[in-house]
Amino acid sequence: MIAFPWITLLTTVPIVGALVLLVLGGRNKNLARWSALAFSFVALVLTLILWRHFDPASGSLQFQERHAWISTLGVEYHVGIDGLGLLMLLLSSIVVPIGMVASWQIKERVPLYYSLILILQACLFGTFTALNFFHWFIFWELSLIPAFFLIRLWGGPRRTSASTQFLVYTMVGSITLLLAFIAIFLATKKFDFIDLAALAQNGQLMPAVIGKLAWHRFTPEHVALFLFAGAFLGFAVKVPIFPFHTWLPSAYCEAPTGTTILLTGAMSKMGVYGFLRILLPIFGAQMQVVLTPLLWMAVATIVLSAYAALAQKDLKRIFAYSSINHLGYCLLGIFAAVKFTGGDTALIAEKYAAMNGVFLQMFNHALTASTLFWFVAMLEKRSGGLRGLDDFGGLRKVAPVFTGLMGIALFSTLGLPGLNGFIGEFLIFKGSFPLATWATSLSVLGLLATAIFILGILQRVFSGPLNERWAGLPDLTAGERLALAPAILLMFVLGLYPQIVLGAINNTVMQAVQHLQF
Image (cartoon, rainbow, N blue to C red; front, side, top):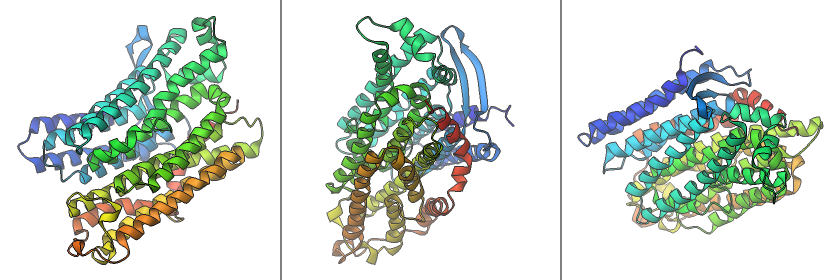
């Protein structure tokens, strides 16, 4: 089972699908839609095969493939997954079909639109499985191209500025990330993440870098922090972290809703994945040095974005800021776990809780946020493009099923016990409080603001007197209910039995925490 190149096959499937759609051209739009969806389901099946044969008792990398590529530059084709990579593959395999179905109303250049989605999916798979920086960076950068054109060609009236801002911000972050790793390569002649993490764990990485690159005006500690800052910025923009978040609201609002689902459900997780896969193992010591500023950034990301959502009138813009807020919880858990605890076993156990919560939060946020934006797409379709808080009212009277199912997704993002959004946030707060009490306490203000704007949506869109303009608004069709059913069911399953995910990731979390005992 392990000898078969499952990861390569998984990454290749969407690329083949994209080529097939381009060959189809514009001759049959429905054929293009269904073909793209079929390829995405093939990718989902392959991911489930990986999940089925994954050994959760092992915290090591599995399904590895390693081949020489450019030996003189230390470049290999090296792929593999642990619990984190497996979870990200499953997340991508679920989010992409949701984005495709939410894009069903796209009428122009349909084969091109869906082929770009499939290319983006291949880039996601590559990013979440590549273990050599050169190989990984190709997928990291290539993902920007389909995302840029999906916004630019099918977005709203301000799509030009939104797509340009998205590309410029993320490119700047990628450049600083690239420069940091080129510096590390010049000193170590290594690009492999596992080798670099081992050097960092043994205390050999930064001395080697400083010995090659030390500048007479800067101390070795300064050089190490410069490299960390370059890598950090690349991931901070992608998440995004306050104050590097300003590209996100306009990109999410102007992108077609199916593309917004891909941005929030999958691409934002690339940044958090980078923190977990690259920053923590390689730059953990530097993160500890600047831990207080990092915690302040996490608090600002959580609290300010939640209160910014309160001031919005556009549903997509509200959920855009809500996405920043919920990803801030992941950052809080990661940064809290960096804190030096020595041999205190009680605090180490809290690190396990916080990091388990981070993994769960990544998956749960992707599912819930994607479903919420899917509901917005359905609402726009029924209202002729309207999505403002004040455009509706009393919709529960004419669309009770729509109201009920969207209400479940809203309460999930609120963190209601019994739904998937609760357990991840609970574990993050439970683990972070003993480790970073002041930051965790301040972050509770974000939970309060979230409750206010979620309840505000329920009140102003679905409750109160019916706006007569929408007296004939249709409820969900049988097909729409069937399409939504798996996502809604998964919210309950993960809320009531999170061990489905925790069982697969726990040993990976344990290894990650063990590497943080500085």
